[in-house]
Length: 251
Image 1 (cartoon, rainbow, N blue to C red):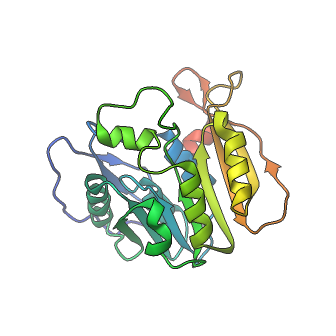
Image 2 (image 1 turned 180 degrees about the vertical axis):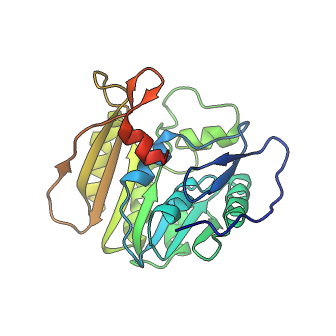
């Protein structure tokens, strides 16, 4: 797929346009608010989208995951759901900037209300890069947008998984990136809502360091069988990515 050329959109003060190294696509972000991180990019590389499938990204932020998945796959429609209006506005303008309005939609709404926004049992693939910390984990950021992105202020892990189970088709797939220290809670909650973990991959900053991220694929109503994939190593030396990370980023 090739980008047919970018449209002109308004860029607000403090915003910038970043290159995504895919199809010539770019994304609008405000570094004073919240910019996407490596976790979102790694999740986009872990997700599998088949031709014709519909994808929903819960808590899409500035739209990084739907935009990257549109660039990498032949899915039919990629929808990002975001509660923060400023982030959703940046995501919408990025979609227009990249001329992908026919395949990427951004909706303003609450994850906790997903089953009233989307038809139940209707979505092929759901992705989520949720807040990693509960409201009791450390200090929340004084900037509201950063705090919402990092802490479970507006929704909890259980609410995300509950709504995912409601709108995902039987046999549909759920992909999430999270922190290993909450893995037991994650697996227990997935099981509660009939989302069976099928693939899991730990992400390590260096080969000799503990993992600091975990990527999980689940199937709604799937049978019990989990494949733990080889670890993903981010750096082969300080400030030098491994070849796999460069490939995921598209360099």
